[in-house]
Image 1 (tube, rainbow, N blue to C red):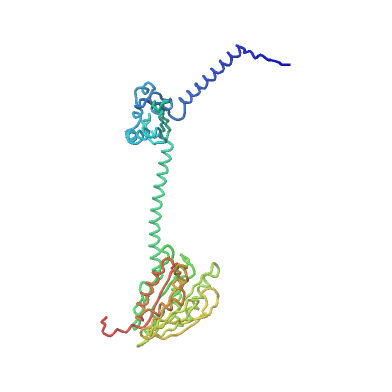
Image 2: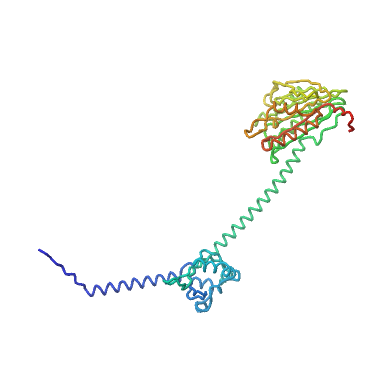
Length: 424
């Protein structure tokens, strides 16, 4: 059996549907118009010559104008400041003509309260056959952005000023540190009859006080004391220990010229001064020289310091070994090793801190080391302390950034003999 159902249309229902569609369409148009008018950004449509055909209430409020004053009477460029108009003519308009749209261009409009920064996006609407009909433009309030950019600029300027001030402060600090560093070293070595002396101090970092120190001073009419040492650490604490060590050794030498006794006194002072807090210690060589006709007698003692090196007039170079000398200031009682030597004309006694031998060299950053120093010294002409210090200064400069610690040098020897035929 076949069944057929006839679906007749109800005219009343069709009428209801038509009414609903019309109302819905009306609501959409009304909502779009309201959104356009009260949008948080400005909208306007212009003819291709820039004449304003439509503008929303938001943009009118920013401009402080009535719609009747604008629509059909003004062009888009009339809304811009002189600078904005110039930029529009030279950049904005040509880009729009070439590309058909531009986005996010910063311009200034003549707002009701004065110049107002905005971001502008424009697009050309064309007909079906591609003919340009009008230009739709969206204008965004950029006052907050401009304020943000201004704040960023102020922040950048403040940061630059702070950087300049910090650099100036750093320079002043370096100058102060240099003055303080110099106060921990003799301004110049004294002239010693029958003997030549030379020194050099290399600062690894201008921002940190080093702990290396040296000195040369008279004991009586015939004998002179010398010392060279290295305080553990850097900075103000190390500088305090350096100052204490220098004055302690000077005072000790005036009471007892024995080098072992001078280092023992320094050990007692450092241990007693710093035993209750963070321990402070140093290494040092202290000695006494006595110039004679044709030679210089040396008596020295070492406390944990690299051995002194003697460059001989015959072209050899050897360490004056002082094994067993203990660090100064670590233990309440310490032992120190003494040694004696005789320097003949052309011989030079070299004292140095470990910044020299612990420098890193070559691509593999190899430790320079004691043997390399001995070899270097042996290859230098035996022309006295000043010549050797000059050569070592050049060696230190050749290390570049491989020299990461302060280095102090002190060289002593008999007055070099005059070269025959050479007038000094």
